[in-house]
Length: 148
Image (tube, rainbow, N blue to C red; front, side, top):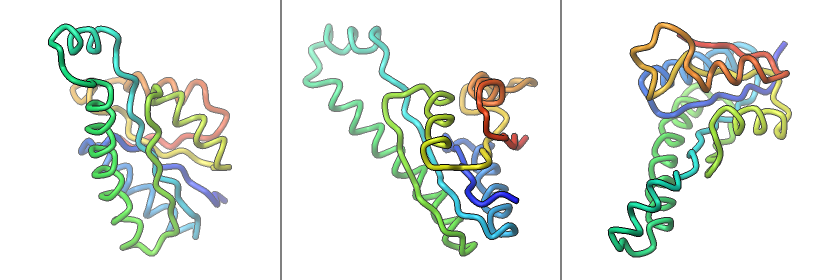
């Protein structure tokens, strides 16, 4: 049925459950997986504060920290795929809004299913879909499995 599953994660506990679920589904279907995490663009306000504080090269510092966090998130997800014996590719998409990057990455890599958590870091207390998940569900042409 599904041959290439995109699993989106932000490293949150709920996203970790969606990684586990997505990897198990891929194993059961003998599908390959693309694991993606996205780093949002740095806001102009944050940049202005750093410049006002005379922080040396704040953009490079932000990008370095973002890359380290993304690598940690991807390493954890990749370990689950390795343990399950699922073929995978892990990607960090920097400087994009998550929903936009998830949809674009799934299309670019020929994924036929997106697996993601019902909400991420910012929406842990919410009872409805998180904003990024809602955007993916409503704008993607690729089926989306939402893990609660």
